[in-house]
Length: 182
Image 1 (cartoon, rainbow, N blue to C red):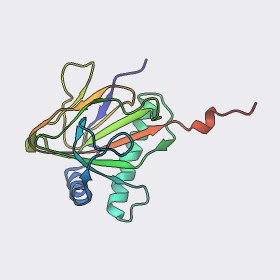
Image 2: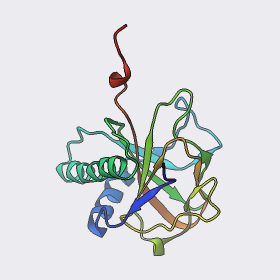
Image 3: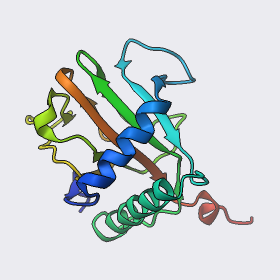
Image 4: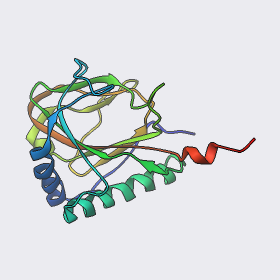
């Protein structure tokens, strides 16, 4: 059976979340979607953290996040992940949102997505991650990783107060394993 989503708390400490927020906030630009276009389906700011990032502390924190992501994908979803894209740092200030969408589709090959909550829930209102077929939004907690199939519809509800920050991960199986010689 494939589950809708999984989550695990305390993937990152308060200090690690704060460090990432400070690092990402300085690098953020207006978010783009589908072919590097500004689109009315998303209003947020983001940047990408590459696996070869020079900042040793950020690199160490990202390695910790990736290990947990691979563990959940393999253990909970029974899906052997092989490739992870650069990790996205995203910020949503008052009025910002990301309308209902899926992280995979005809032109995007992704299998498992994840969001790591970097903001203390007491510091923002609204902005919850909500899955299309589930009535209630996810309960968000600082340091929590929420993992779900990339094809599942989801959205970030509009932020009403404060700032919501998160990391977003996307991964897929190794396509080379599916290629066979004729």
